[in-house]
Structure formats: C-alpha cells, structure tokens
Image 1 (spheres, rainbow, N blue to C red):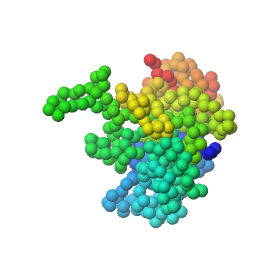
Image 2 (cartoon, one colour):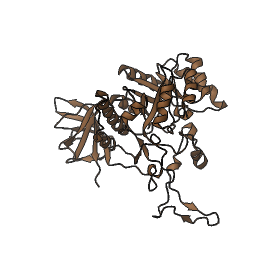
Image 3 (cartoon, rainbow, N blue to C red):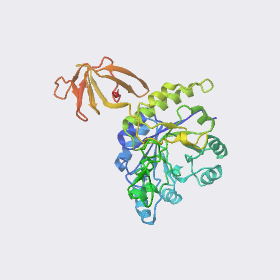
Image 4 (cartoon, one colour):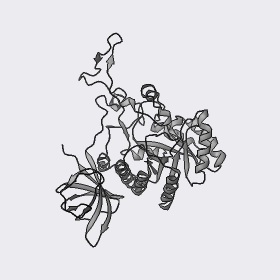
Length: 410
C-alpha cells in the first residue's frame, strides 16, 4: 500500500502554475508554446519556463513538461531545435507519448527523466514493463484502467518506476484522448492539442431522405448528449488509490481557470493530508467534496476504476457546467497604516454582499463587505469593472494571494 502521494496539478500559464504550487500541489505539469497537447492553454515561453522552475524549486516542489505530441516528419527538426532551446532549464521530467520524441530528448538531455503520457494508452503491466525497460520512470496510466488493473501494474514494475493516474477532471469519450471527431467536424486536430470537444455538443437524429428534419433521441425533445461523459472525481476514494499503488494523483485541466485550480487543489490537498495523518483510521470527510463543488464542474463519476462505465456515467440532458459560485476577487497587500487591503476584482460584487475567502492550507470563512474604495480613494457601493483595483476593509485580514468568491443568486 502506498502511503505517500504526489498531488499533481495542471498549469496552463504562469499564474495558474504559481497558484497550484501555493495552494498545495506537490508538482505541476505544463506545456511549452509548441509540441504540447493543449493548444488552447496559455502555455509557457522559454523565459517563463525558467521562471516557473525557479519558483517551483524554491518551494521544494517539482515541475514536469509535456511534449506529448505525435510528430510527423515535418515536426522533427523544429522539435529537435526546440529541445535544444530548453535543455539547460532544470525541468524535473518530460511527459512524452511517442518513442521518437523520447529518443530526441535523450539525444540532447541524456539524464532526462521520462514520464510516459496517458496518450501512449498503457493499459496492461506487460506494456508498462516494456517502457520501464527503456528507462521510463513513470507510467501515466490510461483512463480506461481499473483499480485492480493498476494494482497489478504497480506491483509488477521494477523499483524506481511508479504509476500516475488521473483522479479529477474531464473524461474523453475516445481512447485516452486520441479522437478524430474534432478533426473531422471542425478541422482542429485533437492529437495536436486543438480539440473542440465535439463529444459534448448537442446531437439529434436526421433521416437521409428528410434533410432539415431533426428527430430528438430523448423524449424531452432537447436532443441527446450521447457522448457526454461526467467528470472524474476520486476525492472520496483516496484509500483505494493508495491500495492500488498509485504514486501520483493527477488533476486534469490545463485550460481551466486559476480559481478552478486553487479550489480543486485545495480540496484534494486537505483530503490527502487528512488521510496521511493516520491511514488506518481515516474516514472520508464529505466537506472536501462540498468545497470541490464550488469550482465549475459537471456531474461526477468514478470513471473506469470500479467497473466499465454505464449510462449512469453519462449525462444525456446537458453538457453545461454547474457554476454555483463566482470568483470575485484576488487579495493583494494589506496596509497596516490604513487598515485597508488591496483587492483585484474578477467579477462584480457590492457593499452588503456576503463573500467567502480562502487561501493556501486555509479553510474558507465568511465576510460581509461593508467598506470599499476605488483607486482614487473614493468610497464605492459596487465593483462592476473587470480587474478593477480596490481597497477593502476586512474584519479579518486575509493573506496575500487569498481568493474571494460569492454564491450566485438563484
């Protein structure tokens, strides 16, 4: 049984990377500006990667870079040049799916640690050991594996090779992300990071000889989200992941917001720490799940971990997110002389609003906004402007980097 986890968080840009580290991630994964399978994420320039790794190592954490594209011939020389441009940056590991890319990395960075991406579709212990024999230090398991299969895999791997598994986030309807729908329907290649998520679009049935006549598949006439998986969530099953020998618990979401990263990482950090205090007497605390749900989310599933997904793991009615809370402000510096705290507005809020405030390793608490000023020092009743600079008097002074949120009115 594994009693020590790595909590691995997504980092779509530098702000999200620092947020993930500050709010409790042991490691983050990020992409560069090219050759990373999240073209829609902010991604990091070479200078930002240097800054990121310095920040990560100052906090005694780790940073993994994704180069998990499946390259074509025309990609090889640009990729070789790109690897040359980053080879002196102290990146802790590279997440790779293609054996040719592994060879290109090893060519210029002989001691590089390689993690095998979920894109490589590792679904059995024989394949995992094949990669381990080639020097791969971590297998990122395909989402299609059960906990029982993961346990067999982890027990079969040589010492020094571990298993990483997704525990939270979007599930792909195709085989670990290798999907042709986006390319076919929108001309954007999912295998090069530009997926449009057509599996979550609304579909109806059309008979060939009756163009323009749309037949609803569902009785309510709203169409059918026949490929719309619920999101994965394993926050209530941490002991089972430990028993399966999973070393790294991975959160999906390089394209998610900074608020999402902070909320989800905080919830998993609290749940993992509670488990690690004493695994033998650990009892799941549903408050961690409640906190998790304050970030936008779809309905949840345990994915393939316990059984093959059924209709209970799909949402046939809507692909919309549940958004019960708004991210309204990011806390800045506090001025002892005035008693006011800087806040950068992210969504509108007003005097009289009850808000929740939370920070790294710090559970949320409530405050009522009673006094607020704009940049010119004028008292204001509301903050309607995006990224408006504010000064607020709090009864309980929040720390710099804390996050303010507000429950949406029904």
